[in-house]
Length: 126
Image (tube, rainbow, N blue to C red; front, side):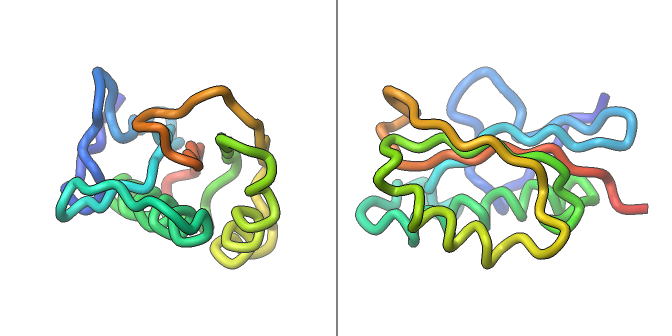
């Protein structure tokens, strides 16, 4: 296993790695809308939050030798299913065909009370 750590994405806020590479796969921890440069939380518009989450996820994937186009599975955690359409629209912009497998669930609470968190599994690019 190889631990992935990049300053281009927010540092872990707990005892976990940004990602682990094992057997040709990248297992990315969930990303939230934290600005990696300032550590500040982006609040408000859930679409903007989702764009930042996907940017952070993309940075971790790049550091691991993968990209959004090699993602095979995502898990989207939402504070409210009322945000599903807005999150889904931004998600659709980020992921081309074929779309990764995905689960989207509403949860009682997320770290730092954010509205969206996304975790992913990707294949390392050859």
